[in-house]
Image (cartoon, rainbow, N blue to C red; front, side, top):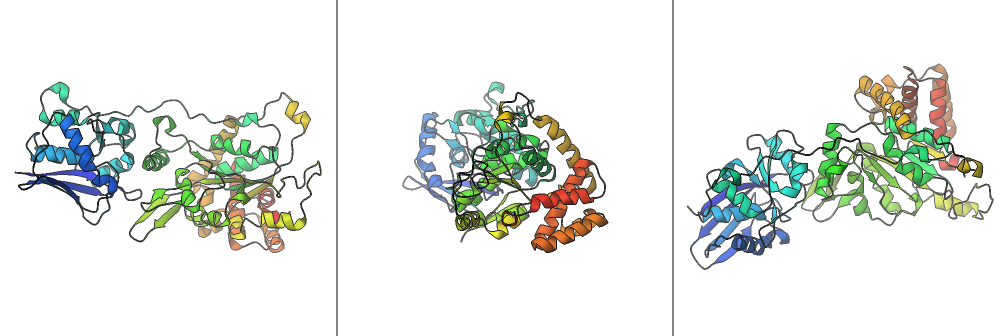
Length: 503
């Protein structure tokens, strides 16, 4: 029989549909054809596979070789099909036994020498294999073994070369069999920059504590050098520890981008794209949809410094993910959905020169220049940012003092307690409460309700702003350990909600 069938996986967004690699050897003039909607890098497997087989000491069949990647209407990309194609040729030409090939799935890119190179998306592939049931043994390159083995129940057998994989099936001895891989999980807690480095800015620290406790978005406004970036880079250290589900989802996204490393396991991602980034870079896209910065920041922090310097059309792509926590990328022939549940921390100067309101009085920007600069951020986007805080300059006395600020670990304890109260009450963070849940769980006392109604009329807030103020007030109450939202909690939430034009 000159036919061999092996199983592999393609990538379609976060999904990894199964692909049958069918290899047929026929009589006729020697040739090598790959069909089944292969991209260019898949078609180039012909040369890589031929060289790897010959350098491994095997014979390349001088027959007409046809490789079909089924289903035929699913696009196939990258070099992950090199390994199953090579094994299929060797099995169809009876150079290795084909009896046990149907018990495994295969993926790996081959070098010309036959060495296996790492691939993207191995974690998503092992996820899909586990969900599919039945076959749960995967042969992958050694460099991908740690991430693929994070999925419980998936049996990962790493290999360094094509020859090792062939020896495993040839069963020439017990020392030749591939061994099941156990992930080397790191035991130490993730380390983040500490808040004790920040001197002064007590109001901004309080805002970030509330944001961390309830998963709220924040806009920091202040002159250059007031600590906006310093505060933002330390924010991840306040967040509750990642759950196993969050860690796996985040690792899967990093794996799709080829960025996963075990040293970042359960470490919340911090992404800070430059203000020249395009909309595709931020939200994701391409002819083959790939995750963007907002998906790479999933379960972590997305920091946008110099917010008005971003192209306005680029910023507008944030509006839907801020609400839904997911992003869907549609192209003519493909559609992919990626998770994008991130915490937005944005920073900006108050005017073009940056010194509006500074004690030095060196700002000479006109009111129209200030309004135009702040107007680069659209009203709908500002409406989706829960809290805004102004940072003033820090005095020389505070900077020269040897006193350290409150440590991140101390603040994180309060944040974790507030987060636990939210999970016990509604099984999710306050940021993701629905309008019906807000009516039931975020009802303030009489004084707070009167204050909120008056503020809504005064500032002409939208219904979205009203709900976001209540969510923030609920978080402030959780930090205080209060069961009901009081006047003081509503008052503090309103203080953080005032928009730039209202100050």
